[in-house]
Amino acid sequence: MNKLFIVANLKSNQNEIEAKNWLEEFKKIKDLGQFLDEKEVIICPSFTLLSLFSRFFKENNLPIKVGAQNVSPFSEGAYTGEVNAKQVKEFADYVLIGHSERRSNFKESDDMLLNKVKTSLEQALIPIYCVQDKDILVPEGVSILAYEPTFAIGSGNPDTPENADDVARFIKTKGNYQVLYGGSVTPKNVKSFTDKENLSGVLVGGATLDPNEFIKIIQNA
Ligand code: PGA
Image 1 (cartoon, rainbow, N blue to C red):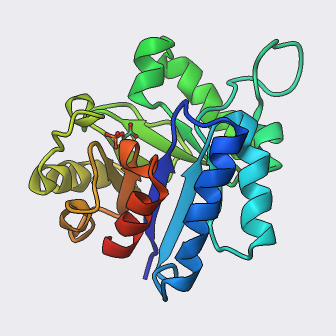
Image 2 (tube, rainbow, N blue to C red):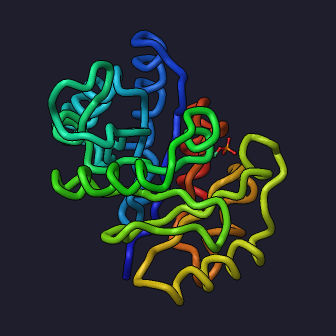
């Protein structure tokens, strides 16, 4: 059986002190039983915190994976300000690509996203490719998708589990994908999504900022 994916997108939050406090609190997950056995928990902090998170999980023997929220479409070289897939791979196993906040605020095009996927796969960094509706183009080599309708992101107004399941079913007719749902997931509603036949997990933003809320999401999923 495939593990359920529980992905935390911390977005542009936390400095080092705040991240250390978050991690100290989150560490209690260790004492909370077998929740982690059937779950692939992935935490995506800012680039500046990737090394801290990855070191913390190793040192504390926590079976938690690290992901980046973005990656350069180029490999290493003269691209001032970019963080490339080889650099990310030092600390992370996963990377979010195509999030709607990047598509809209940073005008990321399908071509650019295709290059981000390519350069990630070359470094064995696993893309979690975000799509906002069922018809969005998916680059070759992607196996994990996150369906995140923009109306549901940060709005407190999630899609219905039934519709998310229908969208996931449709997407899965186009390829061998695992599909996650994202958009206003909370400890209360997480199970209604993870119970659905075609959903393989969740991508969570706002509710991960409080580590205790996030722990509840992992427990309840
Ligand atoms: P949200 O964000 O859980 O705050 O709605 C999800 C996301 O943007 O990935």
